[in-house]
Length: 82
Image (cartoon, rainbow, N blue to C red; front, side, top):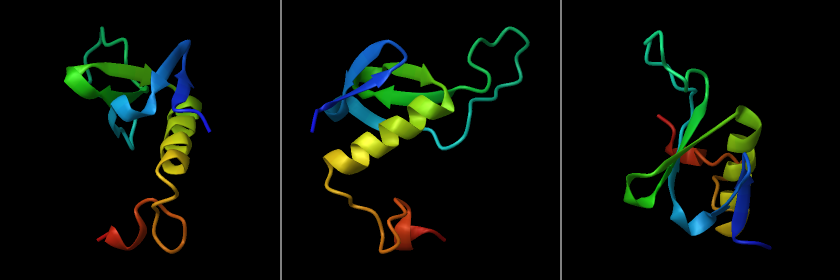
């Protein structure tokens, strides 16, 4: 088990990840370069932008690193969904 996950060309330490976006970015600005990408927020206000494949890989790496703390069905949202 490694504490790194590769996003784009970067080896990201899992312990720096604060949250991972569930939906792709959409702000509606014509000149937005991040439209359709997923944000991976790191500590100290830094962000990485990824495609869905890298986002899913990050979520899987975090789940494995934390010992599979999902709900009974293995869904990370588990019983906490409303």
